Image 1: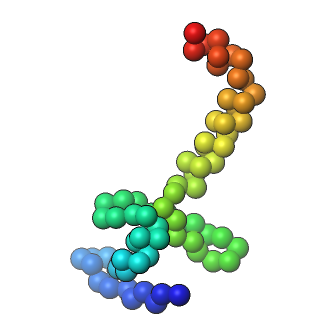
Image 2 (image 1 turned 60 degrees about the horizontal axis):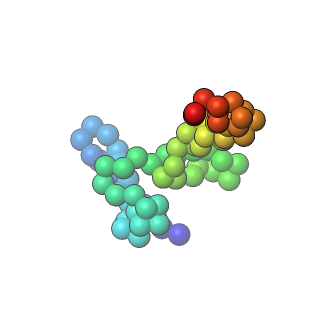
Length: 74
């Protein structure tokens, strides 16, 4: 477990993430991270949960309409 300290950044308050956490998230300066609420509390992830849900829906459609998509690709 890491303890993070809030710090003043301009007119905002920010958190500086240690290198170890950045490495585990596989992110670097300029990347986006996402905070989502879970039953256990808040989770910080490097992937967009909304995009993941859209991809699941797209995969379901592609599986269901495989033949139509194959014909359209010709």
